[in-house]
Image (cartoon, rainbow, N blue to C red):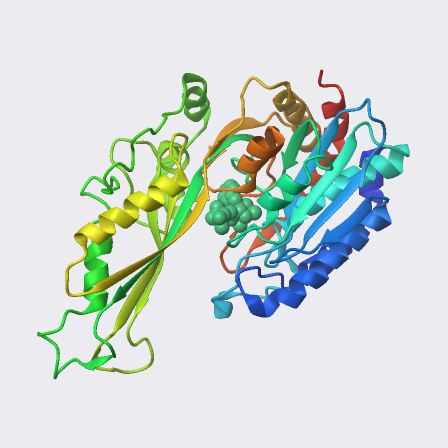
Amino acid sequence: MTPFEYLKKTEKKRMDDLFAWLRFASVSARSEYKKELIACAKWTRNHLSAIGFKSKVYPTAGHPIVYAEYLVDKKLPTVLYYGHYDVQPVEPLNLWKSKPFEPEVRSGYIYARGAVDDKGQTFAQIKGIEAVLKATGTLPVNVKMVIEGEEETHPSHLPAFLKKNKKMLRADVVVVSDTAQFSKTHPAVTFGLRGIAAVEVFVKGPNRDLHSGSFGGAVANPVTVLCNMVAQLHDKNGRVAIPGFYSGVKPPNKWMKTQFKKLPFSEAAYKRSVGVKALGGEKGFTPFERTWARPTCEINGITGGYQGEGHKTIIPSLASCKITMRLVPGQDPHDICNKIEKYLKKIAPPSVELKISKQGGARAVVVPTDSPWLDAARAAIKKGFGKEPVFMMEGGSIPIVNDFKQTLGLDTLLIGFAQNDDNTHSPNERFRIIDFERGCKTAAALPEALATVK
Ligand code: BES
Ligand code: MN
Ligand code: MN
């Protein structure tokens, strides 16, 4: 039996097992789900043990880390696989067509929170490795696997875990399936990710909510003040107005720009897909450059005052917002957090008190494009998808990829199976079944391809 035949034979069971994994409400950002994350980690360990891995759950001060390994021979290359079993919050619930933790198949898609980000994609890697192991009785590489429960939230205890377990995690290359393909007709290898820096801003006004009739006019409104400040984060050309924000920014090199130009782009289709009449962003750059190679500053949420039914005439005592900035090579998350703090403090009027909580983040990632591992990834995708991949970048962030380089000295292969319309972080998250299946095949072809790298 070949690995592909094994995959064919186990199709139904594979789907059932993925559904079992998806049923855990492993929302890492919310403490009320702590037990679900623990149960999910245990299920993951048990599943890997049943395949034949030596597997263990490592508790942390936050959510547990699952580590597993299948070691064949010291002389073979060692591949470290990474994925995350935690998921984003599901709100707003009323927009889901089926319940987020009751996976359902509709028109060729699996619908569930985590279907594609990242349980489904991680599962494809696991099942691909299992197929090779069951079909051939062994693996052509040593496999180590880290599956964390804190990718979607802050802080993650994985960087410290890497530092503490350097020897256990010794490997030659990292493989991550947590990105998207370019499109339904173009599988991809991703050679760069943006970094991220996060802050939360609190604007405090009067010592309590005030009657807006009695006090309005004499006391500054924190919501108005915050909106004013937020409006000063960009200039009229869509550039971030924080002083020094762009200092040190490295533009993409010639090879990267050539890859961008090779990729088809229809502005009309893009606008239609997200439901807007016109695009926004920084003047003078293409949409690929704006989302992959330029840093940004985004308000992720803003709140203050009364939000319930009817009117409540008050001057709210507090307003706040959550901001994340996407970073490109040359920018440091701590430096960027300091710069936005300094700027907001400068523009805040004396009528309010400003508090800023700086949460740090991660640097951008660039995979060396001349690495022989990339050729192996390309060959595996060719087998799995029946098509050559394109090389592209992504605007999203996978913070730990930096630590793989800094702490373990390892480059990462980003081989994603998602689509941009899979609704990651949105209601009705989904994974196209055919992408899942091709992902499994790619994963089954990958160990052999990696084994031949010199
Ligand atoms: N899988 C995504 C990263 C991603 C998104 C890669 C889009 C490529 C395209 C990951 O799970 C994620 O959402 N990361 C967060 C990190 C943050 C919470 C620190 C992100 O990018 O917002
Ligand atoms: Mn992810
Ligand atoms: Mn995510």
